[in-house]
Length: 239
Image (cartoon, rainbow, N blue to C red):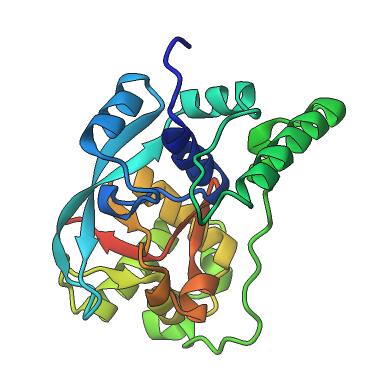
């Protein structure tokens, strides 16, 4: 790759690789000016994707914003650029050398144990249902879990009815997954998650992350749907 990111651009790339975030352009840290973003887009390291935004109150749709999404080229770049220079300031000059040294150590260990960077940063965990939650009985939806655990059409129907019940059939309202799961009751979480992903791929619904960490409750965190290391907290059904 002929393009070499500046120290600030490199910090953004590594930050997003490690955190798994896909922030709105205005939320990325450190801030990127339009030219810096354009360079990363031109190099194929990031894409700018339009996503719907929701108001906190009632989760009503408030518009859309462009989000920064890493590409596969960003991962390829990272594998070749562990020994990268990061920006230094009076606030970070003491910690940056430590981070740079840590990246070199990670590189050596990945090579020694023949582990890919993606595997290291995105370990796969089984999704566990929170045993402390007290869900509403799935009978409220007239769907029995033993009839639907392997039946996609029944689960999809249950999700649609739970969404309609929660939003009163308003398709312009985003629903927190924590609320949707409560309404779905004791339906198996793994099967519900699989169905949500299928519905997303079929363009039947939109999954949206909560961008503001202060708005994410412990219930939101437990209910989040994890897709390849990216957590989604809101679902909006399409008409």
